Length: 66
Image 1: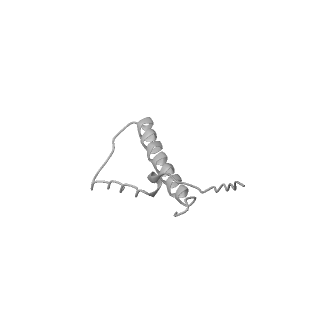
Image 2 (image 1 turned 45 degrees about the vertical axis):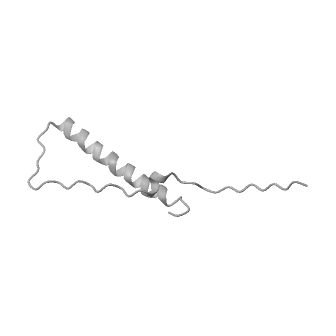
């Protein structure tokens, strides 16, 4: 008689356990002088970065050791 047992375990990629790099600090007196479309693009890039960071943090909660 052969007995077979299948066990499913969630596995998370090691990248999820790595610490996020620190956010670079804004230099004192920093200013960006650009036209409105360029400023909108910069804002969209920052928003995308925040969204991806939140998704990584959220994905960690689905990990067994999260």
